[in-house]
Structures are given as structure tokens and as C-alpha cells.
Length: 279
Image (cartoon, rainbow, N blue to C red; front, side):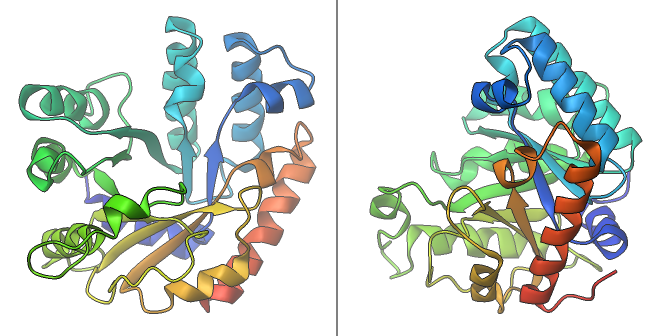
């Protein structure tokens, strides 16, 4: 498998940088006239695949919204990942895993081993057990051609207490995560495979992203309050910014035509804000 960063750069060049979150939570299922069950989630995700699977570069299923239905929900998630990948979209599985030693290795195998049923192109991980806790997932991603998106500056209200705390060398904790990821991306010819998650709702982050040479996922657009204009704060990123929408797109279902139209509209808005070429 070619490195994730290379495959992502190619997909974004063809389809634009927009990322759509796949979140079958109860409110959306009810709005669509579906039961809040694994069966409802399956209809929900199949409709979205039919609508935008061939339109976007990256989708982000939120594992928790499938896990809440137990084994049948996990089966829907497995199918969702396979179908999106078959449609040509890359899949970033939002699991936010973080642990140490053999447990971290098990998480890595679950999501980044191509022989496993939940295999995805990339996953989100939590580094706040220490940078070394990420090593098993980083290593398997490197070997398998997968990607990692590391929680860096999140939008939850009390995150700044930890992420903006100063280390002994004067850097913020979040900046140490940025610098670690930047080091892992050194030498990548096109784009590194280690990305960051930096909320679009956080305002000025004070982070130096100018040496990342990788992707930045910018969630929080739409229902969480950020708009395309907020993406201008990512102008100094060395890499690709991936604006992430969820409910702002999904609330327009179950109409396939409307879902496609909204994605196209938002993609243009984001590409203009980021000064990316519009395909």
C-alpha cells in the first residue's frame, strides 16, 4: 500500500479537501425518519455512500455512534468502511484511541492491519498518555501505508488547561505534539502520513504548523459554530487542511441530490477560504 499521505494528496487533488463526518446519532436518524437502531444506521450510511462516496476525498465515521448498537452496529461500521473505500473515498476512522504497550499495539492491529475487518486508511489517536504511547500505532501505520491524526488542539471548553500548559522548554504541550508529528513527516516526498486534529472553532491557536508537511483535520465547521472563513487561520500550514463537516451536511438527507449539492457548495466555500484550486 502506498503511504497514506501520498494517497490523500492524490485524492484531494481529484476531489477537493472536504471531509464529511459519518455520525448516525439518534437525532439525525429520527430526522431522516429512521429507527435509532443498527438497521437505521445501515440505511443512513448506505444512503450517504450512494450520495457522496464518489464525491469526497475523505470521510470520517465516528465509531461511537456505531458501537452503541453493539455487535450489529460494529458490523454496519465494517460494511460502511468497505463501501466507502470501494467508492474511492479514503476512510479516517474516528476512534481517538490512546493507551500503552500491548494495548496500544492491539488498537493498532484492530484498525491499521489490512487483514482485520475494521481496517481503515487512517485513525484518530489521543497522545495525552505521552508521546511514546503513540509508537505502536505510528509504527504499524508506517508499515501498512496507513495514516494517523493526532489530537492536538481540541475545541472542548476545558482542553486549554492541558493543551496550552507550558513544558520545561517553554513550548505548549500542544506544540510538542506538532513538533513530534513534524519530525515523523520529514523525508516524505509528497505529504507525510502523520496528521493533526486542530479544531476550527478554537480561534488563534498559537501553534507553529509551518513545518508539519502533513494533513490537518479541522473539525467543528457548521453545527459546532465554525464557518469557512475561520479556515483562514490555517494559512501557514505546511501541508493540506481538511475542513470537516458532519451535521451541516447530514441534516439534508435522505435526499441524495440535496446531499450531493450541499457537499459541492461547502467544498467551493472551503477551497476559496483556503485558496486551493477548485476542481
